[in-house]
Image (cartoon, rainbow, N blue to C red; front, side, top):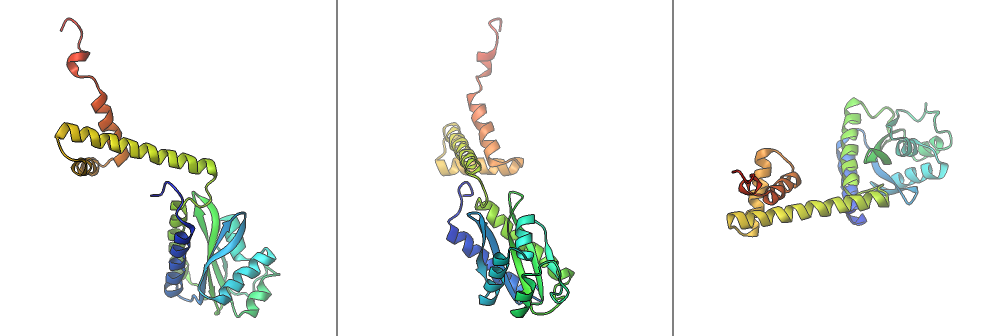
Length: 230
């Protein structure tokens, strides 16, 4: 299922769920968004409300802010109090004007490369304690898994390789299922179940178990390998 990228609407829907959960469960959060780099530019694909959309847009337009830095540098950026913040002089006054006083932006990664950020906003200075930061990291990690599974940020060559690898896995499993059907006299469903059970019992990936099964079927019988003296 992960050999090809998911439908973009499906991915965005999953990220909206992450936003809703983070908004409800990260203590101090008054708004949450997900920013992603698509087609070479950052955009917001999920946001809890219109003010949060404006917060992200102000960062894109000024080219600065925790959201931008986390997305580009792949590091967490925490603005504990915007009244004391000096890192983003063009963006900070606009954020304060919208009533935001603290921001926590956690990087989102696909295949270890930064592709966006999970942004959590609060109207209260110093709203995000260690517990809130840990919770944000968990949500960012889950969102990163979604993006990695969807192939976000993959180049065409990487996607082609992943697709070919998936086809090879499917071919090996199909061949191994056929071997078991012939060897055990069972139908396709039973053969696949047996192959899966063997994989779980031996603690090996299904593809490797299938490849081993195919190799065993191709190995010549011992009497054919024996020398003429025997």
